[in-house]
Length: 110
Length: 112
Image (cartoon, rainbow over all chains, first blue to last red; front, side, top):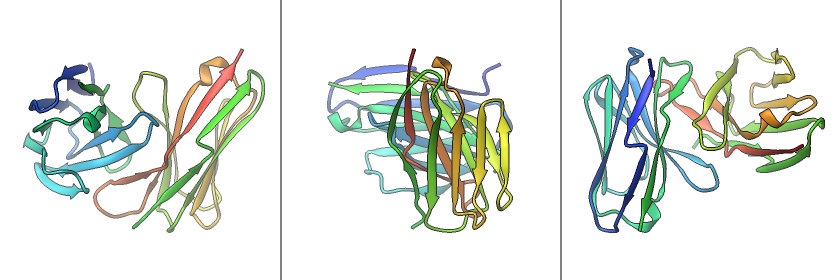
């Protein structure tokens, strides 16, 4: 069983479109994250939710809006996509110790 | 804010050579973790160090946590092609519910 899953794995879209990425974890963790990884492999934290409540909101454009319907799910909606949004987006969940990462969503904005 | 610096950013070695990556935090850490990301993959937890001066080994990998709990290193002896990937250190500051401060990673290439 996959501990942290993300859909879709690949996303190719045009500038200006709106898209969503979904994440689910079956580890029973309370805290989940979204990270953006650029082409130089830098992992930048975007958001964190603890038990459906937003606890970390880094300097991220308003076009990015996370939503956590329950503690096992953390989705990311992106409005008006820009070229600079092209990256790999990782979801992760934590037991306050180790972080478990999803397989990533490779987003390419054309 | 809290920062974790990691060097080098890139390292190219011949198979059989040793490799070391270093992390330094601007503040004292409650623990430090190391992750490995294979090309095309996702970061995977390797180990956690908690105690001042702690040294842990996993086969050819040796992890150290500094006495002041502000720096750490990962050393690989006699690298193999399977060691290729990006190695991240991540510091836990002890607050904000499990947040880790990731270094920028060291991308290791191993030539056969």
